[in-house]
Length: 400
Image (cartoon, rainbow, N blue to C red; front, side):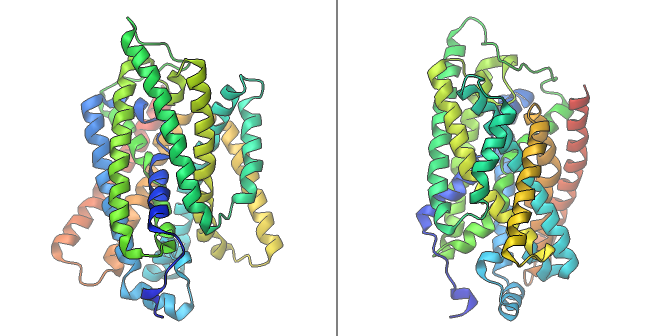
């Protein structure tokens, strides 16, 4: 059997659930982003972001199938499950490239993990009627996550289904609240109103950062691809998942317009009816907990080879420290959900989901045409410019 023939154990249907849940799991602030941009620009913005990220996912998949990548994997015995952005950077630029790419990838997914912890803390506290603080809920979720840091392959499909169920329940609860707001004479009040200048240039750029962050978990797709029984189905499955995500986020954004200036940084803040709120809170906790192992699995695949930990006890201690630090940092960020999402999207997500795939494809793909080179150059320049302006816009928004 050649490397091209190696197959994982993940069924195509399970891969579809996993990829879809990964793309939907981070968009709690999308309605807030739609408020910042306005509904038309929001619709175009989320669609544009989805198209750009999906193209870059294809670039990563093409790089993984390149002769250079496959030859190095064969020579060094790298299994399909361990071929991700860090390995591609190693194939393209050697050890230094692997270190840089793995650090950036791990940071981006770590910030996504922090936002997931914050979301669990907020919704867990609401679920128990504030009998436990957000910080206490975050600590408990860290304890629950620790045994699942290295998620087994079979969990990928199950986690995807559970996460999607959670997302659907959240959306139904938010839809109920939006209908109630639309029927009211004035938009409902939110527990956290906004004060930005909607429609302004910097505010719009900051909102696009939220949209990019919502697709930041796309960095988890290469490991899922490598676990599939039929890798040739990856492209079709990914296109279907991105299409579902565009419809889903646009529906959320449209529903968020019903609340006017009172839209919350997380759409859960606008759900006022007790039963729908409880259902939505439980659903967020379930969906975020199920997505978390997909994030940590990718983080450890990228980072453990760099720190060169091989003894089981050393690895366990590393994971324990990682979990503790994540929990502590999440406590400090628990009131800055939208800002953290935007800042991550404008900087780290832009690197892992746009800049790095373009550079790696240029380096690894054979016979890149002149038109492709022009497209890749334009893509990288625009992404870097957007990262600088977007980071500045988010910092300005937080400062004011």
